[in-house]
Length: 286
Image (cartoon, rainbow, N blue to C red; front, side):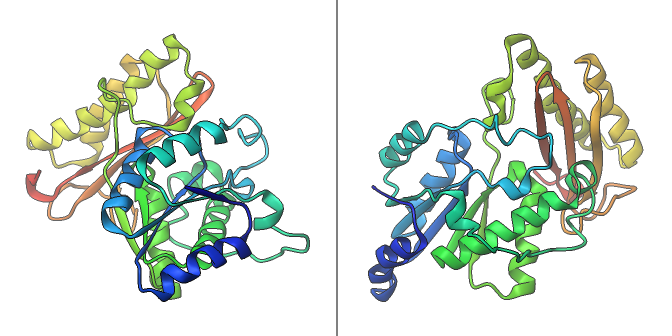
């Protein structure tokens, strides 16, 4: 595996592969790899001839007071895990390579950026995401890019970005990877002390309660949210949001029926801000 720091070197390394017609897969990350990241890399390794993993803690998607400085970083450990999977290129640029002096351009997506995380963290969060992802797509020019379902709204935003700007990359969405007890894997789980860890399970329990209610025949969104909220109360968690929304538009839904519905939750547990979600399939489909 080759670790690359500059865009010029990255393009030089990928040029011969592109000229030879080899497919290129990109896994964008902020590092602190866990099994969720590794699952994306394995999928990319299966699908494409050349696998590029970007490792960049993007400052523009953090608001003032968020955990940019504290965000877990361990490039050496990340590199070892990526190499063990067979990643070809680890692209780990410094901030000044991504945002050089004089940088003043921003890529904005409307609509799907506004609810949920957009309402909780502010629209600037997704402006930072869409700007850096657009840059990564331009830097790497991948055939396929891999994202995890845990960041469901981010996935919807990236899909909108690609459609609207005619970016020639296929977006593959991979399932959430969970710990054996149900906790969705996240780099921010490292913030959790044992007592917090037990409480954090309330998020996945709440989602299961919502799914169980729907499978049991409940169709009213408010009633399903109420069942999920009860599970959060048992874990002493007050959510920032807990909503049933359209998987396509992220608009709130009143009833579960003929279309898939996303149940999304965000909450602070101890020092960690965690998100999770589940999809309730239309008409009881698994």
